[in-house]
Length: 151
Image (cartoon, helix red, strand yellow):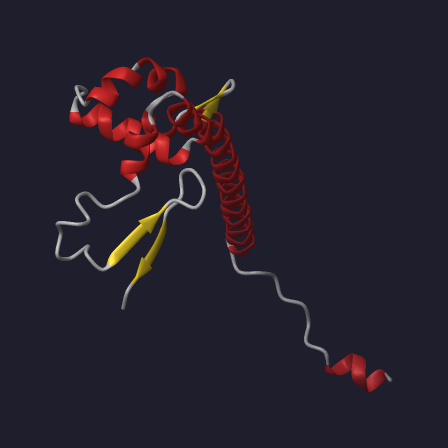
């Protein structure tokens, strides 16, 4: 037992600045962990906030905003859309809105817009087009099209 205690080397002090260096490394490591956690939580919160804002923006009150246009604007431009007198951009936005919004699509169908709305879902001039001749379109449910090929 006494031989074991004699084999131990005597304790020697740490080199100058070693403890300070370890303390600095520990502080740096702790700082990076804090930065990573903070940025992760911030990113998560921003994603949740963005998704919340986006979902609220899609339906403001009881109105949808598909295609960048709200339901009241679609209904206000109903007659001009039917007549084809709207700008290309506004017509495109209304067309996108009608394809995605069940309420406005039903409104157009019930107010004489059936022909225009149905035309959005069928190929133009299918009888005269050599590429479309083999395709038949038939609405199964308002707003949907069943496409059957003769091939």
